[in-house]
Image (cartoon, rainbow, N blue to C red; front, side, top):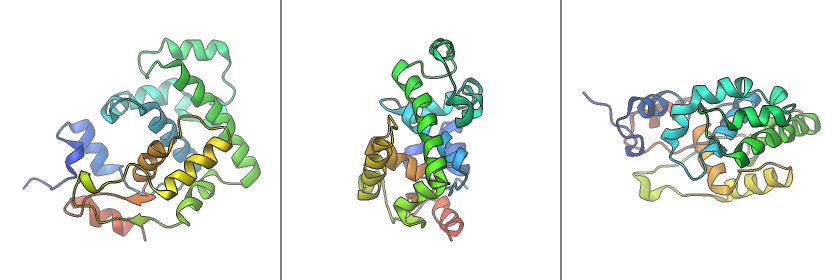
Length: 192
């Protein structure tokens, strides 16, 4: 029997695998959260499937999306990235990834944990919604507004409230699997 999934993921195996295995699963590792934030920012103005298909390219091109390495990128490395067909070759997004790595390091230095900082926007607890379909899903929330505003204040780029909300859904700060999706209850159990 075919599993009932959130309708937004369609039938492309790249998309369904992402939905079934990663989307909405709580992430607490600071570097993993940073990587996901970079990927969500790269998606701005594009479809998520574009980023999923370039996922491996991002990890390869950006040294595993390691902020310690990315923060040191010079102009030569940025120019190399602009020519890399394995990623979205948008100069502003590439430069933003480097800037964001530098801002990440400042947060780690000042606050001790990027993960604790991000999870503080949801008081360290997963928000579980009860969505029936896409029409009920918000584009942003007061929590994503607050996260966006604070990240921008700290120098991050490509972190508007809509990007932040998509990020919060992806890393399990919010469980927005539809209630009839087979992952809704599974993810809910992971949130405890």
